Image 1 (spheres, helix red, strand yellow):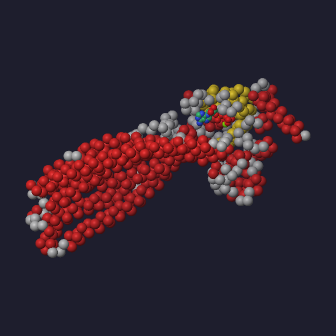
Image 2: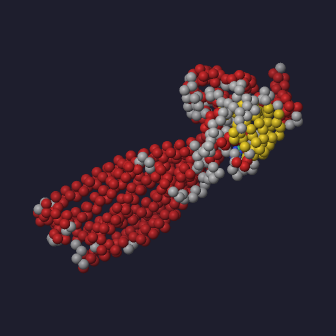
Image 3: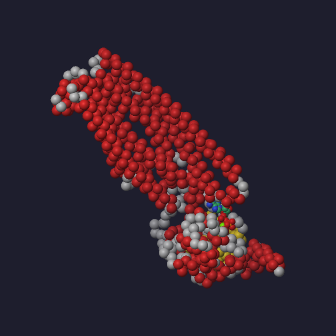
Length: 616
Ligand SMILES: Nc1ncnc2c1ncn2[C@@H]1O[C@H](COP(=O)(O)OP(=O)(O)OP(=O)(O)O)[C@@H](O)[C@H]1O
Ligand SMILES: [Mg+2]
């Protein structure tokens, strides 16, 4: 887990083939069929020039029959020989049509298998990536931009699919065409074939020379597309902040700048590709010119027949076409390589894993922090030598300034971040939490996060998220305990009210209460409330706490709050100051000691008195 890489500067990845093979599960057969069809189609392409050659030389012309291949001669004999066919030229036309039909059928099958293979591949990739991302550590998610991850899971998947379903199959077709055309050309004229092949290494070298440049260009484009997506995603998520602070123009300018930069990268790449394709076309033109000049000379001086020359030119076209395509293929392959690397970046991230002998102990024991220190990646230490015990069934209140490390302590307890071995130990009932099976640990710790998150589903689905078959009455009891039932009943659709994306249609306090109700649907031996009553008024806060006390007497509760009234009933209160234990004791003890607790207590009691005076 220590080697989580950041998303910038992805290096070309080893093992791309292995990754592709992993994704190809279930679609391999379709692609093999595709390749067979591509091979048959390429073969059909090879036959037509031979038919034309025989027609020109032997049927229309008078070349002797013994120059023919025995199989072809046999075929011609079946129709009465070249002389007889001369009067029935439609036979040769029919042969051309028959070959064309074979080609059409193979191409149809190719497209059908390709579509099946491509879609199966994409589905498999999406499933695999989603499953993998779901199991990646919280820490990984914090280090990567959501928009960029989404881009990798959408457009990079498409690029990879195009590469496998288009380029890989084209590569097979190109390979077959290259080999077969050279074989046919050699069969007709060895010297002319060698002349035709002289410029090819130059064209291939030229293509490879540009390959590196394209790869870098595509990588830059892809990374910047990711940044653009992340910007859009962040703006949509933070639309309220943008509006509330009138930041539209600023955000628009920022987006505009990134968008222009992204566009300029594509324009630059487009220019490079245009230059490459045009110059590669000139090289191919030179090659064709050489073949034409020498072919004509051979026809005039060395007895090459007109039919052979026509067929040779066709095969040369088939030879040059793939070589010309090589440039396009290489640029597409570069693009796909970048896409695969970007997907590989996600797949390389290590999933959360249990230790080999992970245990599932009962979780109703004491919680103990033993000399715990912690720092986030690359940040200074946030928690310093924290040691304390929360006896089972008691309530620990935590108070501390913002950024003092309260939530961090809870993240560590829930193993959203793993505590490195040398940074102390957190144990529950004497078992080091690193040795507890993650799912077991989290199933037994109910946590209401500081920023409650609701899915864009109904209230019912949101509250019953951990217990899908929750009975109506249990659902309402949980909501009642969170002082939310009355509010929900006042909505026209009650529990079936959709809450909008991230719960936008609810107030902050309603969201917090929905998150509390969600936790209450499944009683757990440990419950954490991370400042989860901050957005509800003091009266409702008191009501909820009373309900909680009634419902879960035996649970161990950790209550993070800035309200003294909330903390006053705790068995002990921890006061954190810049990641250190500043005070630890019962509320009664702390209200007598000089320190943050006493200060806040007096400020808050003053404000209560003030309010009472104002009200009076
Ligand atoms: N994912 C993270 N990466 C790096 N630093 C982080 C991360 N999360 C929190 N921090 C830093 O760790 C420190 C403690 O944060 P934490 O969220 O634990 O504070 P807190 O006591 O819960 O504050 P608050 O009362 O505002 O919720 C802060 O300085 C914060 O900037
Ligand atoms: Mg916090």
